[in-house]
Structure formats: structure tokens, C-alpha cells
Image 1 (tube, rainbow, N blue to C red):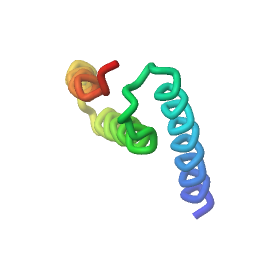
Image 2 (cartoon, rainbow, N blue to C red):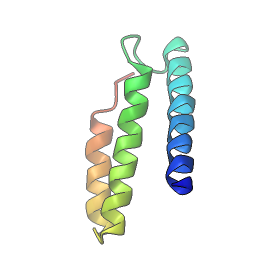
Image 3 (spheres, one colour):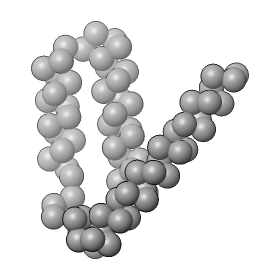
Length: 78
């Protein structure tokens, strides 16, 4: 339970940090104005977690790279 609570707290903190950074990127014009910073943060975290699970399950690196490349094709255009 302690580890689960620590991981949950870590996830909340990382999400908040990414959301803040993406919000700043919108304000600075590095991301489109219509970008939802919180949703983009969840997207990045979800892709990262999914890749980690797949890697732990034995998926080969070249396949994981294809997944990351596909995710980046969905990144908001500048």
C-alpha cells in the first residue's frame, strides 16, 4: 500500500509539472493556443506508461520506437 500511494503521489506531481510546462508552452507560442495542457500531459504520461509496460513484457525496441513515432505524429503542430 505504501508503494502504491507513493506511485500515485508521484503520478499526480508529474502530471502537474507537465501541465504547467505545457501551459507555459502555449503562452509562449511553442504550442497552439487551442492545446489543452492537462490533456496533453495525460497523453504523454499514458504513452510513456504504455511503452514501459510493453518493454517490461518483452516488446522489442524497434517496435517500441514505432509506437513512439506514431504518438509523436499526433503531437500538436506549432
